[in-house]
Length: 114
Length: 116
Image (cartoon, rainbow over all chains, first blue to last red; front, top):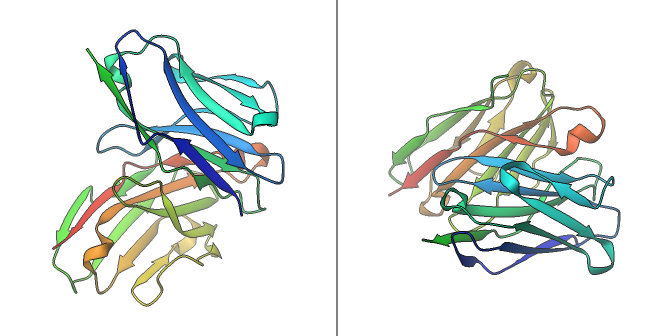
């Protein structure tokens, strides 16, 4: 069965520090990979997506992610954290069936320390 | 371009009562999804529509949940009767049915349901 694993339900970093949120997936077919962000009391917003083009994907708000097939990983990074980055981040994978459905990770809550 | 609209944003009901949620997807998006998101978890797909037909409702608790998408546009999700474990955020998402863009889903703000 397809699955997405996000390491760490909570990640805390200082403002200005590197942000690294980890995502590993299991997929028997080439995946489409996504990172979504959810701010408190809001819906999910697409940060970035990998759809078999460049392995390094740049998204909104200075985030980027690198697809590593050998490691089945799609980790999200940002060089310098800002207070406004505090939110919950979800990794998701699609392409595993013809219905375009997403399989979601459990989410990682990013906490920014001043 | 207007985003996905949902209403109400918040709802508090007692167990055994009924409740309905409404979703208006992005104009022209053929696919519509309803998700349930329990606090601290990722979204769980309840039902997927393609135009006004059901693609997948395998995880919809059909003894109490129902959903429809009339005319392939707006959709309603109903719970009757509600249980305490139904307390969650109900998210609606839509997606175009064109090539790689079909994989990208656009979400509404969600409805936070509290069952007491």
